[in-house]
Amino acid sequence: MSSKPRTLYEKIWDAHVVERRDDGTCLIYIDRHLVHEVTSPQAFEALRVAGRKLRRPDLTLAVPDHNLPTTARLDAEGRRVPIADVESASQLATLERNAPEFGVRYIDAVAPEQGIVHVVGPEQGFSQPGTTIVCGDSHTAAHGGLGALAFGIGTSEIEHVMATQTLLLAPSKTMEVRVEGALGAGVSPKDVILHVIGVIGAAGGTGYVIEYTGNVFREMSIEGRLTVCNMSIEGGARAGLIAPDETTFAYMRGRPMAPAGADWDKAVAWWRTLPTDPGATYDKVVVIDAADIAPCLTWGTSPEDVVPITGVVPDPMSFADPSKQVAAQKSLDYMGLTPGTRMRDVPVENIFIGSCTNSRIEDLRAAAAVVKGRKVAANVRQALIVPGSGLVKRQAEEEGLDRIFVEAGFEWREPGCSMCLAMNPDKVPAGERCASTSNRNFVGRQGPGARTHLVSPAMAAAAAVTGHLTDVRELEPAA
Ligand SMILES: CC(C)[C@H](C(=O)O)[C@@H](O)C(=O)O
Ligand code: SF4
Image (tube, rainbow, N blue to C red; front, side):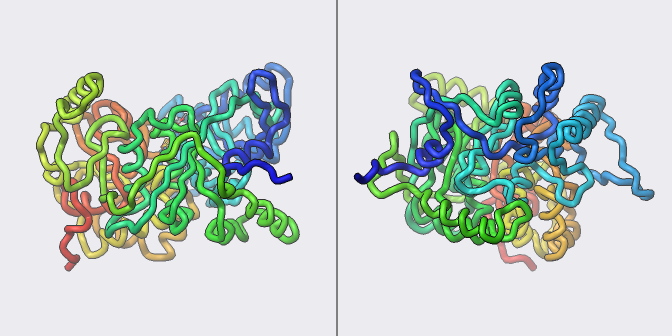
């Protein structure tokens, strides 16, 4: 008897069901749990109070990222630089205490492997195809780029996973986002996902897990796939997935926590069974022509507020939905923008290249290729490059990228979430604008009153050297 064709999502789900309940929910086994300083303290405390241990400390990996300043972490004598912000210092100290107490593997603030949790997981081989991965963090969806079912969870769920290594979940609906054709010049994975969110809307993925299919994703590097899946949550989806393939296996091979030896062969054999079967159906299908995707950016305060860089600030009245008209007007007021202004004419005072969306080595290479031989424009007050991990930083330094950035006038920082969100000293001043490679342009996200334009690394670099939002395709060759 041949079994019903299944999607990638259904295969991973089925492989992790511990128990099916009558109401349709399932107890799902969790393979990997990532932990950072912001969302873990209450969960550890609850375990402590209940006298419980972690069920599988060996499947748990903790690393600080959100609150860490990105300036030097050791002074000239090699001592840890104290953290000025009291709450940040306390959260970081709490994680540092909780990890050894509960036997959790911990990458500390000054370890060479430290970085943003969603950069570290794949890099260490901790995140693997076909696994279920959770973290108290909405951008956990990133790990779906490896073909893992990865999603963010809340504090009580964190505690549940810590205590039982399972979660009670309702299955999601499935959405296929198929992008086929040839991407144009200057169009990066970030542009692809911004375009997708522009098409489906910030709530378009609600209740769904998205699988990205089509030649565009098949031909994309793992770094690019992580960028795409990372922002699934900005389209409202629970998670994003891309089927594991030879590119995935080549990426996984030899990573410190990846399977090795006979385990490797077994793992690859299982990973090969995961791609969606021919004939399997999705609850919803969205088809996008790659040729329609331009280098793009956001103009408003929702990730769905996307226009091509060749476009103009939209007129709120151009939206059919009355509530969107109101929201767009509010966005424009906050952003200090007037309808009809060419996006390319908008000046920026801050540049942020980093975050779990765009801080991997390919992102830094793409930015450096634009910056090389140029200088940060005089009106740009802050231009930060924040590698996603210490290993990305080291690799970039080996390739000489740091010199390119520093000579151009960028600041070369230590790894962390940095200016992606205002939980550490890296902030955009009120009323100022930032071309940012991060994933959220919400009101106040980069600091109270800060105005965020989400862009790709190449577009952020182009804005840095011209001082205004810029079509990276139109930059004159560097001198
Ligand atoms: C602090 C954390 C809980 C939060 C998240 O869940 O995503 C942060 O990482 C973010 O990007 O907003
Ligand atoms: S880099 Fe930004 S989006 Fe990613 S985990 Fe940190 S704060 Fe969240």
